Amino acid sequence: MRSIKFVFTFALAVVSLLFLTGSSIVPQFIRIGVCDVAFGDTSSSSVLTDGQLGPQVGMCFVPHAATVLEVDVRADGGTPNIILGGEIGGTVSNLVSSALATAASGARACSNVGGTLGLDGLTTCSATLQNTALAQGTYIQAVSGAAGGVAKWMTAHVIYTY
Image 1: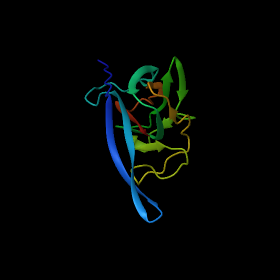
Image 2: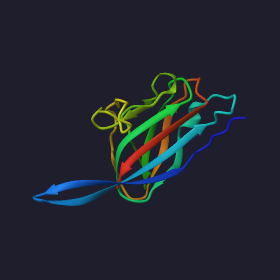
Image 3: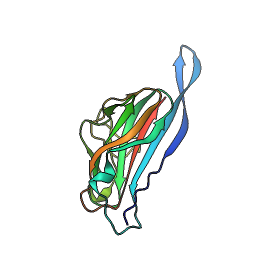
Image 4: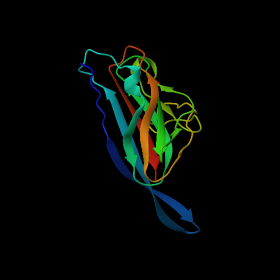
């Protein structure tokens, strides 16, 4: 039996930054949110299908205006890929300009605007992130993907500030 598990997680981290203004130090805060979505089931004998990777609407709700910093993906094998989008008012804007595939054997891969080092400090991201401004009330959704016939499980994470 094929099963799809969607893990809807909204994580909030508050990162404190200090900015120097003249001779005084003024604390500023950046709020970070994460939309985590998962596909498949590692305990299943069935591999992921393309249909499980999209379209899947309304997977994660972003309750405030936000800016996407990074999209990352992992899987338990193969190199499945996915396009995630932001949907508001019936209009979907893809967050990546091309499908984001995992690295070899399902290892972590990421996308950011500059193709720079990812938020994990280890992975160099592709420079395919686009449409980074999310309006309040945006839903993150799986637009499409290619499972590749190996992975039984895949996760995607949209990390944003607000």
